[in-house]
Length: 95
Image (tube, rainbow, N blue to C red; front, side, top):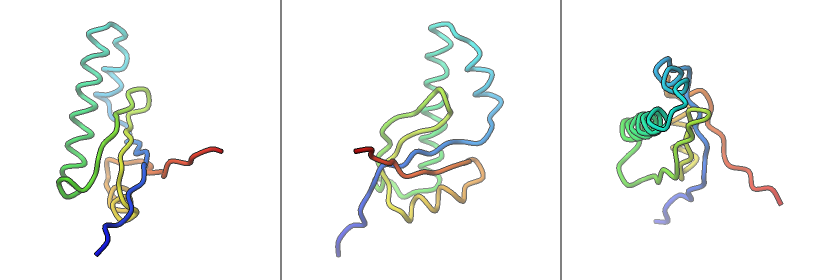
């Protein structure tokens, strides 16, 4: 049986006061703390909702509290239903 095709999706999170506080610190240390916080937060969400080794997170996006991940359409639907998630959008390649 063939594996469902994975595509890149962008996942944007709902308001998080910790993110807002950390983002306000523009120092080098503050930036590193924000990056670590978001990476852990995004990894935790994926681990909670999706099966291990069924997805590949590409990156966390600090400027918008979101991340890029390779997932199937069914997995995108699962993420859309999470209370922590605001929007899940498939990457659109521009020609």
